[in-house]
Length: 403
View 1 (tube, rainbow, N blue to C red):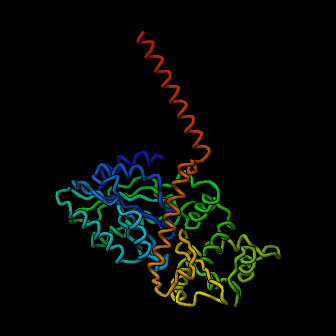
View 2 (tube, helix red, strand yellow):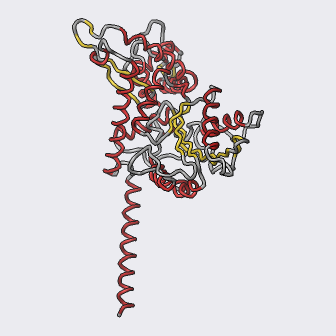
View 3 (spheres, one colour):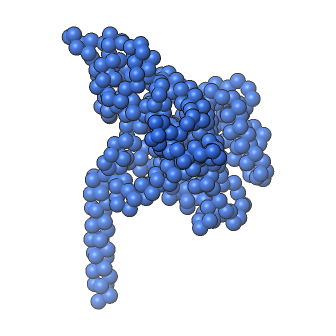
């Protein structure tokens, strides 16, 4: 809340907003608290509030660049379709996929910032504000941009961590480019005040805990393992990434209890002669964070060839689940892979449907107050009551003065 109050004043000094999200959670890692201040900032700088993507005047730079970081942790085949799907839904944003491990990605991003600065040669420098949820890689990416942008070996300017919450305050101004001058500010990871009610809110929390976007200890380790098992089965139902962890010749497993027993057996995890399922669940989640996510990407990438197989089996239609990252999931029906089938076009349409569904869900929750906790609602009610009492008191005083 403190950062949200500071955001309008920070934006008044900002030319480019660099919003970092996680490629594995391209929708869940959107912070909806930023939307209202960003809209006001864009309107002040000439963007048409009624026509997204249209700018009425351009006296100074005003660009909103969304960087989907950690692109190496999602299958390559979904990058172009998702980029086009987001362009369709959000034409006023520039979307960029990036990974600090890929030099060309960092170079492309710093070049984009330099090109924006060159469009405004009379400005003293281009100011870039970096925002995003915790642990999406803001500080790490800024260090990479600074190292490449200055074209010389530079010490790491910002401390980084695998856990959320290391950056606590807005950083000092960092120089990313000398000519033209480009400067950046890092900010603390800002979490949503409330993840939502019911299954939707619980699922968002589990997703963020799995990528360490929030403290993993807030959620039961078996709940995290159950959701991870489900997602890996969606990403590759025939040969999920976890199979090498299980005894030899094991088949894909759908039930968590069965999976944890098999994993504990394979790893010899026993506690007083009984399978230690809690330890197995923790091992499974830590394995995925360390290297399992990369294995899952490789396995999901190989699924491309499976879309050319017959769409029916034994005379019955085959409906298969397909996923990309943890946010996008859809069913593939026989009619989706007709003779004129184009993989990228089909995936883009499915992704557009996922984005639309998510947007409608968020609007519904906002309308119903589902994005506010009971405590926040009580505080709002108390605030409104105090405001009414104050207004009533002022009215009485005015009447008294008038007499």
